Image 1 (cartoon, rainbow, N blue to C red):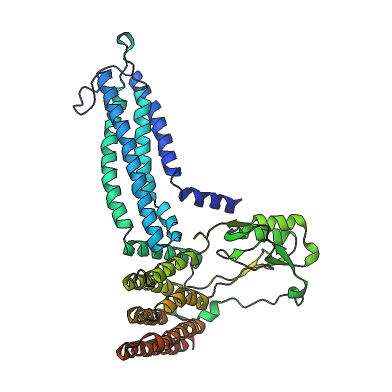
Image 2 (cartoon, rainbow, N blue to C red):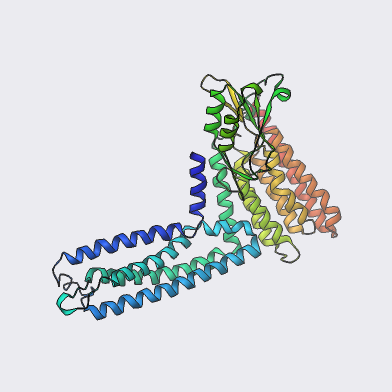
Length: 451
């Protein structure tokens, strides 16, 4: 149930209707409150406030009608500007980035401000009575309508500035990089410290000898990307039916209907109800989301860099900005302890095995495509090596340092064909030597600390 709520909340917060709908509902409630207050107060009680509206019914109708009409016009302009920004971002940086713009709370609040102001003025307008024997002018409500109009003008100015900033390449890269770091902090909260990182790792438990042969696959019922996995449900089901579950996929993976979602052992404990419960604990969707898939933001940075390196764009500076953000994220990841893939019940019995997240695989995912598309760009290759040297100074696990060094060696090898200039190749070789020296020194330092 919890993952279903997370899925709906992720949909809601990335929509353009939720916040405007909330603000419109608040505007309706405010209309009832202010009109009721106007009806139960004596006339002229606002006269001592020079800025308050104290005119007649005709003037109030004209003011509210003007505000309501202008709000709808401005709302149309705001929608148009938003669509232009979305189109620009999609064509230049990739369609996957549209979600970042749609989850921008500022854009949603701006749209909600104009819609709510329009609705407020429209509802107050219908309460004005022009008949002389039963005339009624909600002075407080009209005054608030004028104030909302002034606030809306300020919001419009802010929105123009915000859109102008949000479509800049550096701002987009920075926002995606911050989302990647947030995902790392959420999924890898534990620091491994300066001691021996291997001591903190949980030893691999011994699986039943016939697990691979006797385990029964749990088939998935749909197609799509895994967005959420409810680990609590899986643990409860495995404990209840005395099972050992090994997940074959993690959030972010695409899975085809009928393929194995998990392996369950022993097979005789498996039922149709169990298969349905496991499928309900896995939420599939048409696209990846960053809630449990921190690699989604990483792939967005890679996509921006690859697009920037394409012949049609030829923007190595944006690619370098992406490499810088990837370096910041991987430096943090190198200093974090990977969460154990083994989940145990209260009796310390192994129940669920999740796919492990390995740092070498993340390094390859971060740098492979950028390296392949930057073979002829010395500036990007050199920045890749500089970034690897920085990450190497933070890496404490031997396998992490080996993955970084291997990536640096591949970058250097690719320059022999991609860079015809001898001086460019010499610069790359010089930075490769720096990477080797830093990783070697860090390895010796880690070995001494371990001793």
